Length: 503
Ligand SMILES: C[S@@+](CC[C@H](N)C(=O)[O-])C[C@H]1O[C@@H](n2cnc3c(N)ncnc32)[C@H](O)[C@@H]1O
Image (cartoon, rainbow, N blue to C red; front, side):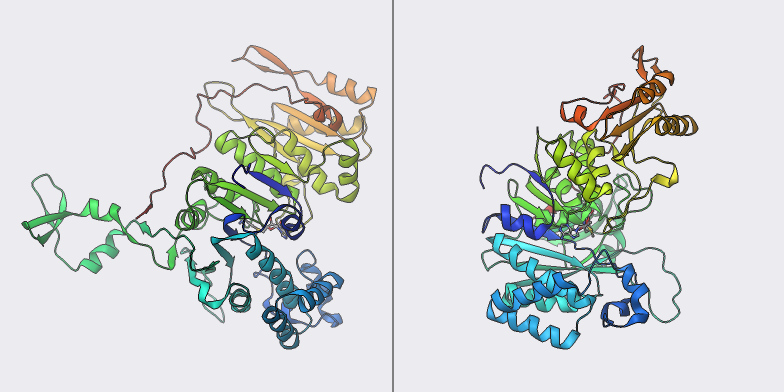
């Protein structure tokens, strides 16, 4: 894979791995499979025959169920996997029972076998989970990777406000299992900055201040009495251990994409720096809004992202564009998306939300609404908007908005009137209507009647309501809007060097 081009796959990860990813082809795998542990833990263990639990089980519909697919995977594991894996999964089946937890276990086991196959012998795997299933997952990992290849159980501790709980302590950590494929795996020791208080506590020495006002600790080296400056010592840092205290994403974090399970970039940067080198290939088979691939790109690694939801793929594309000005087809590949009108129609028939998210990604709009781990979408704040493009076209740096609506079914003039109303109500600059079916004369008329958005800075007019068909988008049509003023700061730069370093 020396000529590997960075790739996003829209699809089911087991199928993608089997079809596209050869043995021993990637250097580092990070996976953060969906697991909604906020929901009732006990529901995971309830036998699926119990009628009373049906409502709760429905809540898990989009995740795991002991259904025909789970049963088939279980049979496949029993029949075709290595003897120790077959015995382990059989024992789990007898012990856990046939419930959602068991469905989760077979789903994870079959994927971890595939992931091990594509990992290079020098590679590593990091599995992100929480205490709901971590104890079982460690047994699965020990069985598949070998317990001698276990490296760490990393605790990601996210401090913050702690609520009073009635019957337990607040849960404030995730678990990340780190396994090597073999004793040959690469590892870069990693330094993190000292917290001042922590450093002082460990040094247990008095602090002095020199004539320039700098704090130091006296040291006794070979050259006699010397000074260890505090500011330098803190930056130089200490080797990281397996307790990672990193803040969770705050609701106002600049990197926040609105994807509920999004992980902080700092977490992924640490993993990637510790277990890969520039040019290596990083794979995230449950890629979500793309944190791992963005961190990989920032750190000059190559990357592969897979996700089964187009909401995720649309966000990944949007994020790559915003952070690094990368565009699909030109700078990286996207596999699994509709390539022509019939396949777009098929996607719309199969799942209109996936269609919607895919269509938004064609114009690099940011999807609004929708839930990760769920196939369901929802209109952004019930405003009748599916996506947004923001732009700045004057020196006031005030963000202007293009509101996007996507329709895969029957459309009429009323839809355009509604969009016009929404654009006015939201005080947006432009409204874009993406449709699979061609627009009628009335629709075009209604759009024309909406007039123009005038950009003073560019001294240009842009149609206030624009209709784009999927067919036109396939032929390269784009939203007619002011081009960005690149001199304005808009997104956090991704080229900052990480504050932590490899030693
Ligand atoms: C917990 S989220 C990952 C979040 C990610 N770490 C981030 O920072 O955005 C899990 C993702 O796995 C995806 N997913 C679930 N099952 C999948 C499957 N079988 N194949 C591919 N993706 C899957 C979901 O769509 C969801 O985006």
